[in-house]
Image (cartoon, rainbow, N blue to C red; front, side):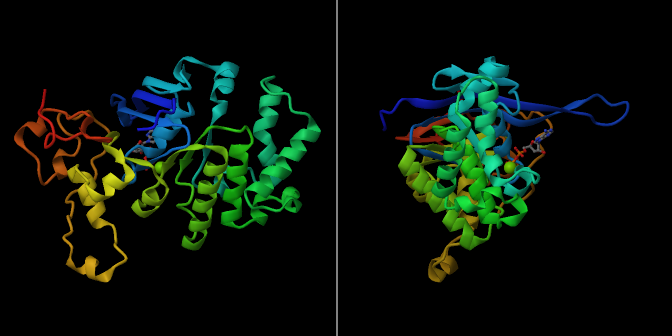
Length: 333
Ligand SMILES: Nc1ncnc2c1ncn2[C@@H]1O[C@H](COP(=O)(O)OP(=O)(O)O)[C@@H](O)[C@H]1O
Ligand SMILES: [Mg+2]
């Protein structure tokens, strides 16, 4: 266990979205994130994995306060961001920046690469949080571009003049401009070609080693999560099913959902691939549009027991550094 102080502490985080169900019907709710807890220490990577729609992006956005959480606390270096607004929130959030999946959609097509990278610092300057001179700002942009592997000569080019991988490098430089300690990465390589994915993943690793960055790293690809993560949280239907040291999760998955996910992932060795058992999940991921009693995975679980229908398992320690929300490992209270 590392003794580094906690950088981020997320407690009981919920993000429910109101949705209209059509004329004359009562509005309903989408329970996108429904009570999750995790923390991050300096320099570590927590991988967040799970099927599409399980609440990964919503978690990152609620942590960043791009969505204001319905409930729970988001403590960044001990300060609860959910209680702040306006300039105090922006100032407090400085240590935490975001990188998005689709660099094309997240970069303003009318701004040059240099202006995009400088924008966070300009905003902080305007709000009086930072006081970086025009000359220093320009130097900082040059430095950042070189650091992420882009020539400073490209400063005046527009996003469409870059490749997908280069655009993501611009997105990373922009996130680093405020010298964050934590970067929330929402599927930052999912839209890229496989060969480019490896380069960008290695860039993330190099930057982490150099600046001691912590990452919350979202991906649906288990191989990417294994490569990048110190610890891994597996999400299912707005909750965390299992959270463990990465190596332990891949050797010894405990939750039936994690076991199914890992058994479906391809293994590069054809012999192992041919001989192993696959667990095929039946049914679809349920829609997060109602509150369910019992375990969120009940409908699709092949190890379910009677009490799993009524009782909701909480994330509990099942071994050192390994938590699981499943009654196979602890009794209902
Ligand atoms: N702004 C929103 N309004 C209503 N529902 C939303 C909103 N954002 C996300 N959702 C819903 O919340 C659930 C989780 O979405 P998301 O966090 O994007 O999942 P993931 O990133 O894991 O694919 C989905 O059912 C999605 O449709
Ligand atoms: Mg997403």
